[in-house]
Image (cartoon, rainbow, N blue to C red):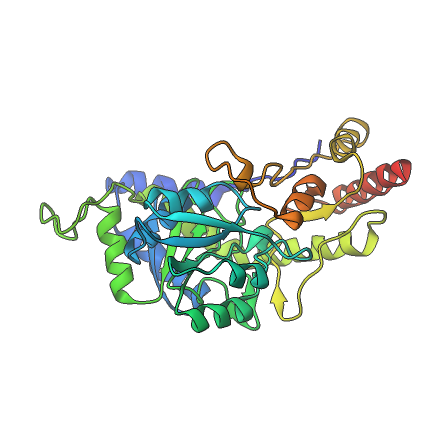
Length: 358
């Protein structure tokens, strides 16, 4: 079975962990500081703060930007629940809007229509590794005096019009979960637009203190360990090569798949293919079962239930593109571990199953 995702942990990562363990300094320390400095190269040199998960990063970023009870933050419903969870955990209200059909990201027109006097900011998700339309969203934010908070969990090294994701918002969050384009085993990174925001994220991740026992605010324990940072530093060094491989694999699938809708890329966008997501008509679940049972090709569905229909957020909304995507998307393997034989097998499987269902 070709898996839809495959974390790559090699000898260099193991050696880095052994080095930290041997040092005896395993909590947040010099490895975390070095990882933060090195990660900044991905986001035009912005100050970065490492935390213990992507969700923690999103939550602390919002708190650092003053989001709280009475505020609204506009988010897509077609995303992982952590996007809206992070808003709700501040006491603010996530306002769900529709996506545009081609790139699975926030529809700027839907965002504009959702702005109220309570709106504090807009949270675009660079879903699957494709950047949201930051030009249009930036114009909306400027017009209404709103902040932008980027969910870049799946978009390490993606860019929009020559500018890297993670450099547009007041803050941006990158996830470092095992299946992401790079990992620290578990963790997250917050890219901050100002030193004030960065300092507040640091305070919040460490019980509200920069100096021991001098707690300035009520904080959390969301620190990254040096063990995780050591893995992240090794992975960061491999990211550029892995990204090129993902893009090369995606180009091969683009050129050879038939009978399905392959993911387009917007002009001026650099897609890093955290997921290679196609659309199929008809019996999506049957399509996936046939891929696996008859052809040995794994796949995923991200995401079958829109956030606004989850029990935690149940709201009656008309989001047609969100609903259509939730019923049609299948993510195929695109990860750097694929061989040419794997890619040929994926193409044969998809084209065969698509033809049989035509």
